[in-house]
Structure formats: C-alpha cells, structure tokens
Length: 328
Image (tube, rainbow, N blue to C red; front, side, top):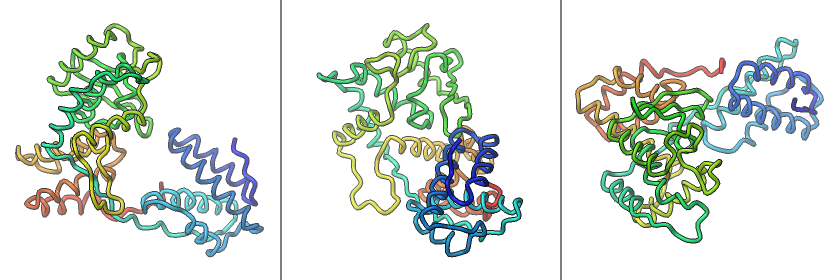
C-alpha cells in the first residue's frame, strides 16, 4: 500500500483502497499516481487542516500540466476524494471540473500517402546490423492489421497465435486500453494475408508464439521500436506536417486508427446508413468505453463531409450532452 505523509494520509489510503476494488488496474494506477502527487503537495505547503481552503486546492490545480482533458481527468479524481472526505465530517473546498476543449486534431493519411507507405513497407530489406531480423517481414503485416482493423499499436503488437482464429477471421484482444477483452472481426482478404504471414514466419501451430517476435522469440516488438520504424518509412515517403497546430497530432502509427474510423464513417455514408445505426457499433468495435470517447473521431470525419454536418450535430446533441463528471 502506498504510504502517504500528509495530514490526510489516513483518508487518502482509505480512498485508494476503495478505488483498487472498483477500478481496472490502469485506472487504479492513474488514481494512485494522482493521489500521491496531491499528498506531496499538501506536505510541501505544510498543510495543517483537513478542511482544505479554496486557494490551497486551486493553487495545486494550477501546477497540473498537459491538455485540458488530462487536467480534467486529474481534477476529477481529487474531486471524488474531497467529496469522500464528507463521510469523515470533513468539509474541504470542492473545485469545479475544468472544461475540456475540443482541440484535438488528428492527422488523416490520404489514399495516395497510404499507397506510398505500403509500397515502402513492402520493399523493406533486411539491414545489418539489426536488433530484429524479422522486422522487414513483420512491419507490412503490422501496418495492415492497424489499417484494416483500427487497432491500437499495443493491441497489434501483443497478439499471440492463440489470439487469432484464422478459420472465422477474428482476433481476440486481451491487452487493451481499460483491460477489457475485445473480439475484432477481419475482412476475409486480410485474414488470408495474415494466414500466409503466419505460415511464412513458421508460427502456425504454436499457440504461445508472438505474432511479431523480436530476435528473442519470447519478446514482442515494442510500440517504441514500431514507431521508430514507421518514422523511417514516413521520411522515405516524404510525409510530414509543417506548421503543426497546438494539440495537432503529426503523422504517426496511431493515425492509422483514425484513417480506419474515417473510412468506416465514409463507407457508412456512401451506403446510406444512418449515423445512429453506425456509431454504437463503431464505438464497440474500437473498444471505447462510451460514445463520448468516439466523438472526436466522428466530429473530425463530419468536417470532411460538410453535407453530413447538420445530421451529425443533430445526433450528437442528444447522445453527447453536457457531461457531469462528479460520478467518475
């Protein structure tokens, strides 16, 4: 158990114990880190009263750095903790939740850029010396899984043969954001490519084999090394983002997930499907905890289709109302 040192050390420990029972490991780790920082702040300012004053709380909030969503997520945890203090007869100042600005701008690769990326990846040559002698074979498959299924990089790289059903074309994702297992169907053409890749790598029939092993077969390619290789491909493809705006994501592996969502949304529009029929399924497929998490993808996509803007806004006005974060 974390050892807190401030005047609220007992209450912090009790609250963290409650969070451990009710939260996933990743959520618990985030809360634990936040509470430790808050505890250290209280020690630094020599806080002697459990009834925290407004200036004490707001001064701490001003020390938090990052995007508005990051700051809000940290403040939400402390709000919950401070609300919990009321059960002890303590009445501290409860800060409002900072508003989250919709300032995230993803990079969407064009069809032409994707053709260049795949062309370069498919022609990668084995280079010496190299830490991973398989990377020239693996990377084209990594890109196709992310592009064709909208997977996160970590989800793709952590796959083992036991997670892949080549008969029905379904991936079982266990190492996901929020620690939730998810089933992801593949297009039949991608399934065939993946099957040929597994045969070529000699991993068919070995359930525990990493889909993307390094020279040490017990270890999988890391997100860091995959991003490094992708950066090399982007340079060869002459793809960069000049004059990037604040909070605008430059070209990176995660952008392939945005391309998947963009193309899925465009396909739905072209086939005449209504947004309220598409969004819930797309959100589940992506592994989002809520439709709110999917909103940033769809807002961006709708900007690329002006004729759908009114329809999208009418839908989101009912699905994504103003959110009260007091409960979580």
